[in-house]
Image (cartoon, rainbow, N blue to C red; front, side):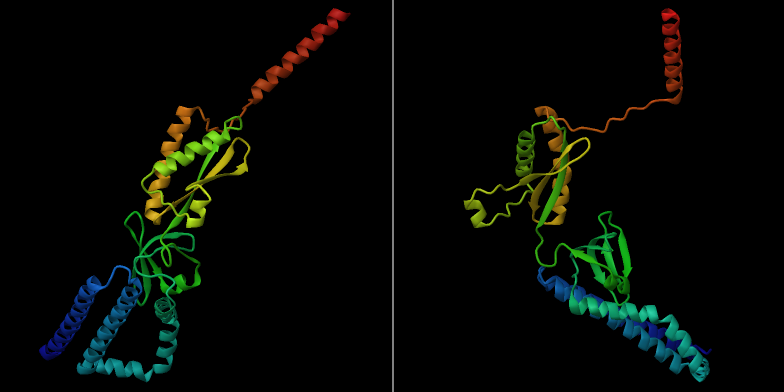
Length: 295
């Protein structure tokens, strides 16, 4: 390859890189102008930007191949065996095409948007950060990025906590002993929940007029060792609900200890085999002794 060929490759790749960087810079500035509530447009723009970058790089590669004679000959020879190549490429690109189509479906049907809190396949949990032509990026609470192919996202069940309403009803469960006062435990849980700053009053005007409680506490099961209570506490979003749940588990435990409400734990009776053998020998000895007395 001559110096001219290297110049063509370098200039073409630099132009592609500059175009993509300029596009991303323009879109990032545009994102800041969009309202925080307009996540749908941000999701669509990010996806379009990723597709445009892919197209630019693809065109750049084709220009490089076409303008460099050695590469052009390789391309022609590959094109001559197009039947075999098409079969190989077609088989290898099935997953890629499926991911691209999956990304288009996500943008069109909008099961989630950038910034939504989602749970996918009951396994992946976090905030949607980006939707590319191949995969969806989710930021977990550990600040790790979960990369999920779009084809998988489209075939799994998605739980979206932000798509319509951010408010969340948090289920927080407590177990108390059978001889504990249920009404007293219920009032302690309500008191601690309402006192938390993240607790949200989600009652309607009608419920307020009917004196419905802000926090409901119900008995949900009679277990082997405990009476299980569940508190229904509303928060403005999932993040606040998670913090509230952790805080309530601690504050209610301390309040239970102070008010004399026992949180039971399972009891187990362990009998060792050697003790059983000693007990059997002792019983046999006592039976023989009693028979001698009667004789």
